[in-house]
Amino acid sequence: MKLALDSSQNSGSIALWDSGRVVYSAYFSISVTHSETLMPQVDAAMRVCGRSPSDLKAVLLTIGPGSFTGLRIGLATAKGIAFGLQIPLQTFSTLQLAALERYHCGRNILVVMDARMKEVYAALYDEQLRELRPPQVCVPEDVCGWGLEDCYLTGSCASLVRPLLEQRNISVIPVPETPLQAAGLFTLAEMFPQPEIYDFQSLAELEPEYLRESTAQVRKRQT
Amino acid sequence: MKLALDSSQNSGSIALWDSGRVVYSAYFSISVTHSETLMPQVDAAMRVCGRSPSDLKAVLLTIGPGSFTGLRIGLATAKGIAFGLQIPLQTFSTLQLAALERYHCGRNILVVMDARMKEVYAALYDEQLRELRPPQVCVPEDVCGWGLEDCYLTGSCASLVRPLLEQRNISVIPVPETPLQAAGLFTLAEMFPQPEIYDFQSLAELEPEYLRESTAQVRKRQT
Image 1 (cartoon, rainbow over the protein chains, first blue to last red):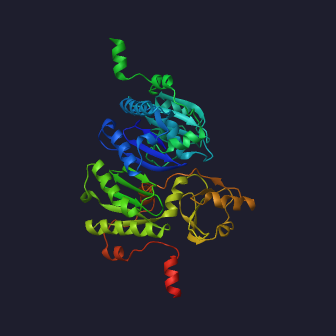
Image 2: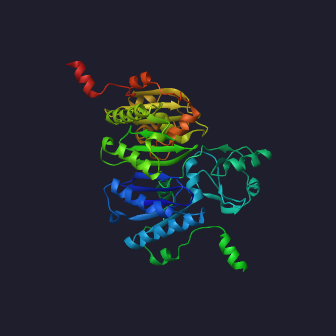
Image 3: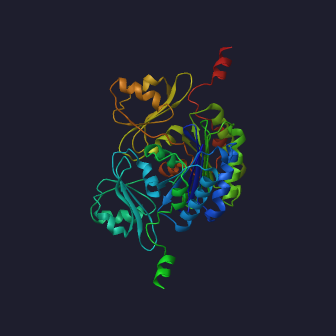
């Protein structure tokens, strides 16, 4: 049995995988912090499935970009479980998980998510979800030069970016907004296999992919 | 706030919608009956969201085809909630919900689900999810004459039907298997609006779309 976690956005999601399929998945977008909901949801999932944490063989996590606090809570939780059970932790880009929605649909996929401060987290994938433009933080106008004609457009900032593209006569195909589901990480793990071993050193050194400094860090550096 | 339910398969799923977005979604594929899990899951969802049943303004449900027992439990539950709160019940085809996975992807979508007894539930949709072939029960070979070249293929019987198509040199694009999520019903409800009124008569008369008689019904008729 494997556990997948996503707390990279305001929403959160967990999922369990057993014998080659998703057996449980939960998504919640509610105004309480991940630190209050994530572990109780994992606990509830285990109880619904009649299983215990010792059944877990791996943890999968969205490593970023996304909410700084959300990413820290997710990584701390995942590290704790992986360390406690001595099982591997496998991480995936939040943007690649969002792109999975249009996997194998014959076109490139642009993902744009809110990075606040008038910027977006953006990445471009081909239909096999291979990176054409790796995840980066930029102003929305910057993505317009990426050669996006006829690509799919998804992510929380899709409705912000689409008019900018249309002003430049770049036509894209919007994807209906769907919740970001941790269950998709199991599919990504099959498409892009990662080591199945527990490695304390790499676990300890793993950090969220913030893509930029937090406002707090910038302030601290400037003082 | 709206509630969506799916218990048409061995798996089950519920979701809550509030202020224009999915706020909670849960999927469970576990070896206990829907009659034990469906209402506790609805109750858990309400508690996680800090809401009560009286906040519900509509119930959305997959009406079939699917597991006969599952459909009955789903419809009984949904009718009970709709009747108790005097709110509308809106129903959608299980096959159309599965097709939603490839909405607006430029090709037709064939959905094939297990109907047991060596048959499948099958339907063909265009990229706007309009019915080209309405849901029906048939042997897998029957769908091969539907003009499927280059369409997407999804559903629990996709791996059974694909070789049959390939034997006839019909190439299709398989869709990665993903859990059937009730949350998609909110998207279908926006695409295909239904009356937002409570109507006791039509609620009382609503039946599952079994598409065929159950073995028990056939035996009874034959005796």
